[in-house]
Amino acid sequence: MSHFCNFNSHFYKSDLSDGVEDETLLKIQTRYRSDFQHCINPIGIEVYDVINDESYVASVDNNADGKSAPEYNSAYYGFKCDNNLQTLGTDGNPLATCVDVKGRVEKYRLKIIAVPKNFNFWQNS
Image 1 (cartoon, rainbow, N blue to C red):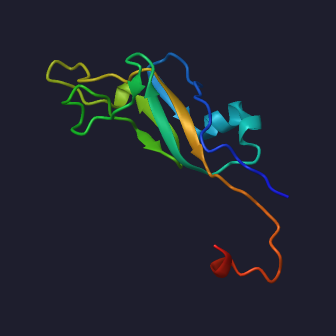
Image 2: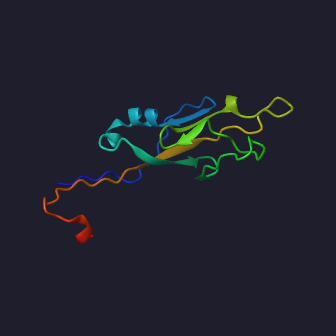
Image 3: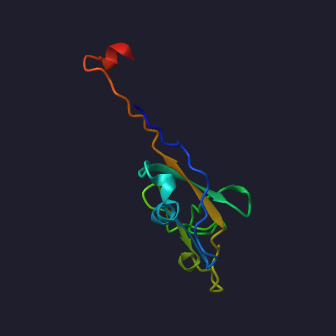
């Protein structure tokens, strides 16, 4: 008996248009429950910039490079970027704003098989 989980999910878009890009893992797993029925512990997340049609790149210097800085971007939490948390310039406006994103989860690739009791993994690999 064996069971495979997809290595990469399709892209998910679960947030509202309210200045907060919220693709948190909990929100994605709740909204798309059937996709995560057997694969609940992701190993990574890929965030994609919808407007610029490219992979999302976060700021490396507190928005001075014109890019947004996410609140978090990890396999454990997912992705969240809030315009209210971006660095303000001298004019009081944010140096960057959160871009519209979608997220794709990298899930464990797991295969469960029955192995004979006397099977020596090291000898047979």
